[in-house]
Amino acid sequence: MYDYDQTRTRNRQFRSEAPQPMMMRGGRSDMPMRQMEGSNVNIYSPTTFEDIQTLIDFLKRNEQVIVDFSSLDQTGAYRIMDFMSGAIYALDGSIKEIKANIFLFAPRGVSISVPPQYRN
Image 1 (cartoon, rainbow, N blue to C red):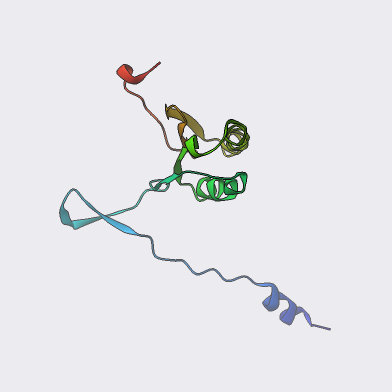
Image 2 (cartoon, rainbow, N blue to C red):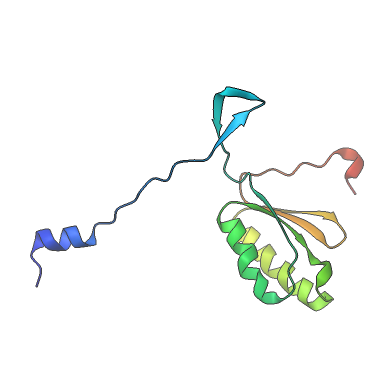
């Protein structure tokens, strides 16, 4: 049996802070800038429903993902779109159709703006 001090020490969690990636602003190397969350954009073309986990993982990491559904049959594309729509709703994100069978899924905090000439 553990005494109080051993139990408390044993259950303590330690976190190491990883350094944040740095980016340079507009060619000025003397002014570092932190990379913004959600600034990664991934492009993915799922081939089976099992690829859904990879797509959801992008969103959970606060990364955007462009999904090309053209390599799936209609049923598979609907299943993945339905699942992704639920994930986007749960994560308070947004979806925008780029063109037929290609969609942008963005996490919360990423706004998607479309110029007037491209709006339906």
